[in-house]
Length: 247
Ligand code: ADP
Image (cartoon, rainbow, N blue to C red; front, side, top):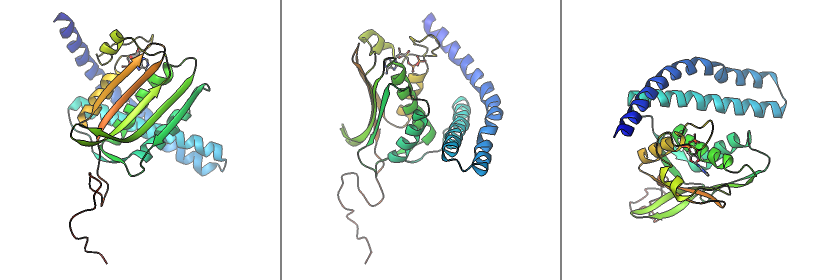
C-alpha cells in the first residue's frame, strides 16, 4: 500500500512537472515550426529539403505532444480523426529512418491501403515510435524490426492489428509481467513510462495491447484496434444494402 501511495505521489508530481515542461517546450519548439520553411525557400538541394522535412515533422510532433501532454494533465480529450494506416506508417518510417542504426533492417508493411482507425494521429504515432524505439534499443547487435498492419479477427468482429516485432534480447516472464507498471525500466537512462503511456493511449481507442517475448529471441507487441470502415464499404465487406442512387 505504501508503495502505491508513493507511486500516486510521484505521478502527481509528474503531472505538475509535465505542465511546467509543456509551457517551456512550447516556446523552445517555435523555431522548429518556422525554420524548415525558410530552409526549403533557400535550397534546391534535395538532401537539404529532405532534412528540412524531417525537422518539420519533428517540430509538428513535438508541438502536438506538448498539446497532448497539456490536455492529459488538464484531463481534456484530444481531437479524434480518421487515421489512414498507410500515411501513418509512412511518417513513422521517415522518422525512424533518420536515426536508424546501420545494423537494423527496418520493414514496414500495410496489407490493405484503405485501412484506417479513429483516434488522435499524434498519439497513435507516439505509440508506434515508442514500441519501435524500444525494439531498436533491444537489438544492440542489429537485426530486423518489422511493423505490420493487417486485418485480424477479434472477439466481436474484424479488428485492425498492428504488430511491432524485433529480433532483440527479449524478456523473461518476470520482466513481461512488470512491463506496464509505471517507472519499470531496465535502462540506465530510462523513465519506465513509455509502455504505460502506450497502454493508456491504446485503451483510450478501445483497443488492447499484448506482448509475447522470449529471452534471446526477440519480442512482439500486438495492438488490436477497432477498424474504421472506409467510405462505401461495410465492416463485413458486403456492398451497402441501401440503393446507391447513382447512374
Ligand atoms: P523505458 O524505455 O524508459 O525503459 P518503457 O516503458 O518503454 O520504458 O519500457 C520498459 C522496459 O521494458 C524497458 O526498460 C525494457 O526492459 C523492456 N522492454 C520494452 N520493450 C522491449 C523490447 N522490444 N525488447 C526487450 N525489452 C523491452
